[in-house]
Length: 78
Image 1 (cartoon, rainbow, N blue to C red):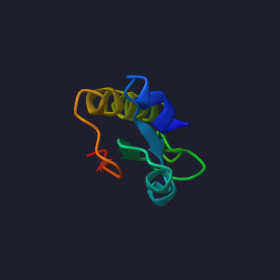
Image 2 (cartoon, rainbow, N blue to C red):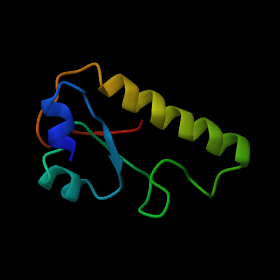
Image 3 (cartoon, rainbow, N blue to C red):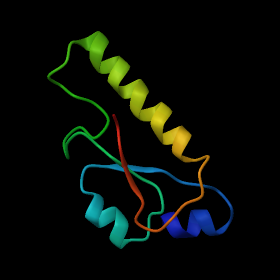
């Protein structure tokens, strides 16, 4: 699915905790998520801190859309 979306000119960033699977299906921009059960959050944080964490994931994913995709390219949220 990701490859088909990118083939028509729409860039995609996939956020997931299991990056090997995302890479095996051809994702070209992969952002490593926190955990399988909560890829863009951390339930151990306070509500305010988790909201900030989720925002950082979205901002990083959007930033990754501005770079050319390379099959299997993985980045981490720092």
